[in-house]
Image (cartoon, rainbow, N blue to C red; front, side):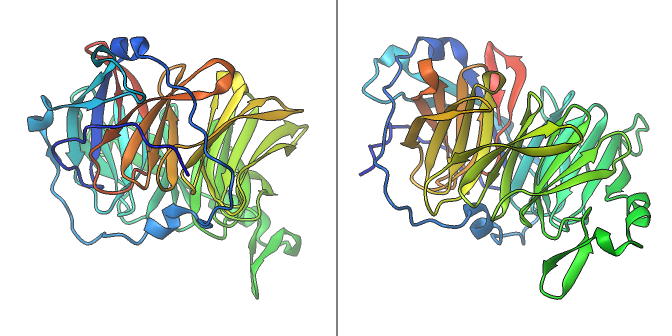
Amino acid sequence: MAPPFPPSIPFSSPITHRRMALSLCNQHPLSDSPKTPLLHSPLKKRQQKHSSEEEEEEEDEEEHLEISLAKSLSTTHFKITPSRNPSPEASVSYRSIAVISGHMGSVSCLALCGEFLLSASQGKDIRVWQQPDLRHFTRFGHGDGAVKALVTVGTRIFTAHQDSRIRVWKISRDPENVFKLIATMPTPKDYLSKFMKQSNYVQSRRNHKHLWIEHADSISCLAVSQGLIYSGSWDKTLKVWKSSDLRCIESIRAHDDAINGLVAHGGLVYSASADGKIKVWGKKGKAHSLCGVLQGHKEMSMNAVVVCEQGKWVYGGGSDGNVMGWEGGLDEWNLVCDFRAHSVAVLCLCLAGGEILCSGSADRSIRIWRRGFGGGLCSVGVVRGHEGPVRCLQASSLKVNKGEMVS
């Protein structure tokens, strides 16, 4: 039997899953709140086998909502109450900054790019919101296939799409076309250099071959590190691209099932997969090789991964609602926490400051955890308000009234 969840006060005004709720976390009360002992759940056979993101993907995409900035919510407050009967002074107040909407389809990913917050959706469009007032600035990318992931490198934005392509956009100062499409990966030059040679073709399914530089299914995640771009796909492969000339330089058959999450940190790449594993990859010479495997529960999908403290701790979120954490390095990894964080699948994780980890779930809530000594996590509270699954989280370094903005 999983332990009870900490009590919470739900947000008084519902927020649709096509919108992003941006909340302000006042960090001074948070630092004074008591730490809750780690919640453990017994290890047992899990029944959820497939990633909840795939199950939710065909949700409503018919209605095109108007762009709106719900300033009326800017003074609305809701509370996050730490578990285990905290004192009233320990309650953490979160204030809604805004609810921004306008996407066609559910929001699938978020990214920060200088003064802008980027949001993308299953409805194929990418919208740009200007900080700190979060006014709608522009939109781009519509009609190019549902957007699954976003990363930024300097003035360039890389977007991964359901059509198995990566698109590259450049921020231009031309006011008529601020975000300009400059390339699609694989590039035509990459195709031309490979397509004549039969040895460059691999079989993806029966009677179907494609070039090894191509993904054969949706690209679900992206990561960048040290001049390289990493892409993970439902075709089970991890591909490595040079950011300088956008060439694909390596393709790795990384997992036995779809790759759902990627993090690049400290020269290592961490991939989370529906096969229930997080794998750690390191570059040796010109190629990447497997450095470690972090094993999740049997018959569960690992949907998200984050890395803390220079790679000392790794946390993964699973389709069974659990968050698992490991401590270690290249040679050895030890499980330091394994507990039921949500009633259903964890879909995303993000770090907000040095010790705070946030988890978003198909149960429509965001739970907030503090890392303690030894890597264990203790509950700080829960944020409610979304009407649909929370698929993506992004913490901003923007400070407002001594708080940190989390979307």
